[in-house]
Image 1 (cartoon, rainbow, N blue to C red):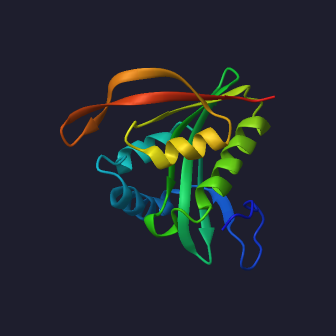
Image 2 (cartoon, rainbow, N blue to C red):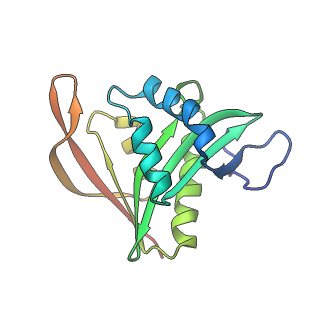
Amino acid sequence: MSAVLDRAAAPGRPQLARMQPEDLDTVVAVEAAIYTHPWTRGNFVDALRAEYECWVWREAGELIGYFVLLVAAGEAHLLNFSVAAQHQRRGCGSALLEQVIGQARQMQARSVFLEVRPSNLGAQRLYQRFGFRRVAVRRGYYPAPAGREDALVYVLRLP
């Protein structure tokens, strides 16, 4: 799936919509299936209450992915970016990341920041293909099965 997401409903095309409280059961289930230390329902509830840019992507009613983006003071911070396991490595991440960048631009952000685990090589390759550059390391940022794992900080400057 490499088509750019369409925010308008169109038969047979992925649809991007604002995340709603009724989406949380499915979002939390996808989150738990793909991460060893997933966001909790409370994390998502907090993001919705704070009015972050919380979006879900569905095709034929099935949740394929979602993202949470905080935009303030000209900077966007991608807090959560996830594609359901059965849809990974099919171009879905690229299509969804295009939407993240488009949303950041629409909100007049000049850059997009994110953190990624050093062990998540697939995500690093995806971000690098889109022009993200590594700018820092946060030591011991993520919980991991054997203690803590660093976070690589990436940034994409928006024209």
